[in-house]
Image (cartoon, rainbow, N blue to C red; front, side, top):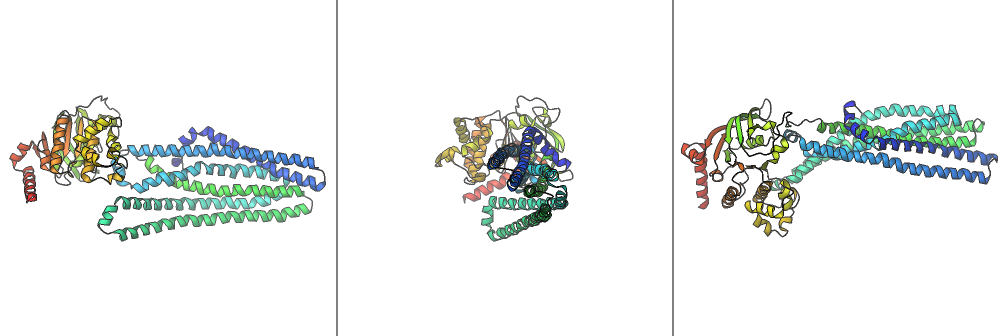
Length: 584
């Protein structure tokens, strides 16, 4: 493996070094004891053929063979336990480490990488890695040590010339193995990439099943999948074809070795240069060399696949989070919710279009800031800067007088309850989804939060009530039920700052009014940032911020903005007209 790629595995291999050492020592014992069986078989053959060995002596040698076999059997169990067991543990720890790494990565990473590809790292790539640090290590050890031990015994216990004759095919294996390894490396990488693309297509199609059916695009999706699946099949076949070439090549070399042994070894036996027992033992030694030869091919395949897999896994490990704790973080024991923007500007990329420009506002603890604007005005970006999903390009955001970049991320986000725009729900029970932000909450607290969010009565109408399974991404719930469940989840967190990103768009106006009234009564000290499209949602806010193309175009209270006859008044009049027309 390449030096950079070794860096991922080395800490884990070092951690389990004693298990690997014990496993290899046990494997060495197994290989050593295996050498005795052909030797004992040859002694029995020579003794019986020359009449120098009686039944009692033959029985004693047979017991030795059984003892060797028992030691070999126990040893095989132990080296598998030590090496395979350690490989499984390393696979588990790397998978946990990869998941923990993913949890630290910024939103940009997920925008640039597809789910199916990431899932492939956790399944196929880690399996290939485990094969390299488990079976491949045994294969490598046997390919080197077993081969050396058997060749030494063949040279000095049987015949040097016969051994040298059979050694030549092994050099062919070594040369061929190098070229096969390079080809396996490339083709396995292509295979994994094709599988990742297929996984991503399946994941997207299942997630978007309703859209596909609504637009009657089943045939098109089936055609797209068939093409991706066919590409996956072709990439797998390229690997299989290479294996179908490599292993017959090994078998041909092994067969050639047997022919050399039978022809030249038989000649030496007939002319008395070696005994019949030595000839039989030599054939058994050749048989023992078959496994190391095959193991050598397995090792080449496993290492080549692992090289490609680890190279793909490095993509995750090498990723540096855009958002990290500053080296000079301040200790924050309590956040009150004082939020201040000073000349804040933001762009998603260095040379990209500015999404927010010169934003300066101040929200005191307990106040409510409502944020309105057309689609794409920068409303969600505004609140994402408060949670540090992104950092400002220019300017500074302060919370309780502290630069937000100096507050530890964990402390910052623990003090912010966020109701996102997409209202994501896990495939779990309703109660577990609601308790996600506060796992220690009591059932009474859950019910109280649901009553404030006006979802309790709906939940009680479900057959399983709070134990209702919501399905993947909350598929069994309506849009309004998901929104209100997400609000309850945020309220249960009891944070000093509450952010609601257009979280009442799917509920009717009466329910919206009730929720807003409940929120106002619940906690007057909670600072609220509310993105909304309905003017009715924000009319009681302490401050209303109207954004257009990332800039503040209006700012003030409801009455102040109504008096300006600007964008806010225009939105208000338009929505009032729509409301009146809806009554007709």
